[in-house]
Image (tube, rainbow, N blue to C red; front, side):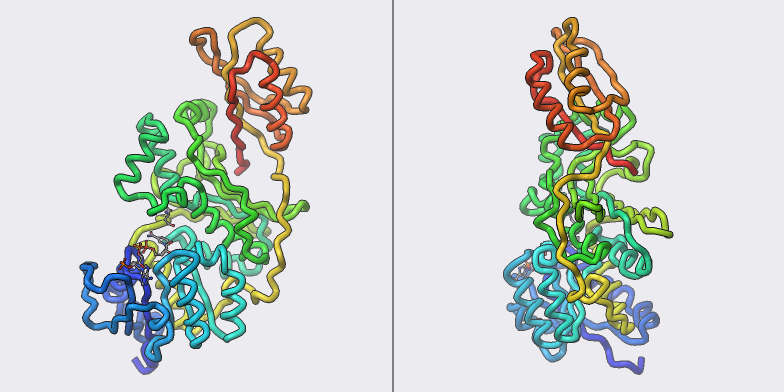
Length: 429
Ligand code: NAP
Ligand code: HSE
């Protein structure tokens, strides 16, 4: 190799950090052939120096303080793999930029909250921040949007971006278990974040969606405007009922620019069981990009884990080694516009599940409420009666969330619907 080695300082030696060390070691030859230079790790940082991480750290300088690591003269790229939107991750990222280093990070939380200010700071300093690993693990979705679809107007970005939630929902369905049972199981298996609400509350996935929306629509990252609802209220009854109607429940992220502003949602939705999203099992992620001219592009793969996430980190590192210095959000941060959040969602069909009292005229009252709210019924199914109650499933034609909320409120006045009815959006794929 004639070019000088590219020197990495890695802060964070957990799942992802160790994966990156292993990959650099294992694929050193391929990497140097592809980039024309060696990629080496010069220094590392973590909280515990003595922890056995299953990799040999003896060849690397050790820093207790990630900020000191970020400023080292023998570091060209600061690789931030600690996590957290404040504290050491942000401090060290800012220090790296100020010290003239490029940054590669897997930290969606930090970028969802501080992405705009960090991108501005990096670009003002002539540095680059890249974050392929922050969204959907090993799936190269940031690259697909920033590079593959660089010339397209993006109409919609949607997908399943949290593997733990998809694991829980598909395990509930396949094993016939309740949310509480599968949540406990997933937690015991270590599938959930230290704060499980980041997963099941939809926050982690919403961080990812907000980052993709910024690239797709040229807007400043606007995590606060993501309409957010976790999977905690999804029941096994609904999972079974929607399956019977040809759907599956997914924690679905959707971002689209509408005439009403930027719509960003991370909520449990129904998707057709026969669609690519409907067939997604376990901890796998799927992101669908819809561009003008390109049509729909479906990306599917491992959204987390040592190898997949390290592979995404390395793709950013290799870009920098090859001299590809793309802007964090695909265009100068100074040109990103403030997002104007849409206050209402695009109309959709909805699924309703009611517990109806089994008496004459009950269904007529339900139909009247829906008619008065202007909500049209597409399909309906009533199941066997149990103790004078009949579960009724309704799929509506396209309508607004406001109309559905009104219908649900009005059902309570009918005296024939046992509260609370369930209403879930059906996303058109
Ligand atoms: P992790 O296993 O919890 O590892 C975090 C590492 O950061 C640990 O080595 C920890 O040190 C170190 N650390 C924490 N605070 C520190 C501090 N103040 N100073 C120095 N080191 C510190 O986390 P991870 O799963 O590898 O995730 C890392 C990042 O990647 C996060 O932003 C996460 O959201 C993102 N990510 C992870 C995945 C995944 O599959 N795990 C996928 C996509 C993105 P000790 O080991 O000594 O405690
Ligand atoms: N907790 C995340 C998930 C890890 O389950 O997808 C990757 O961000």
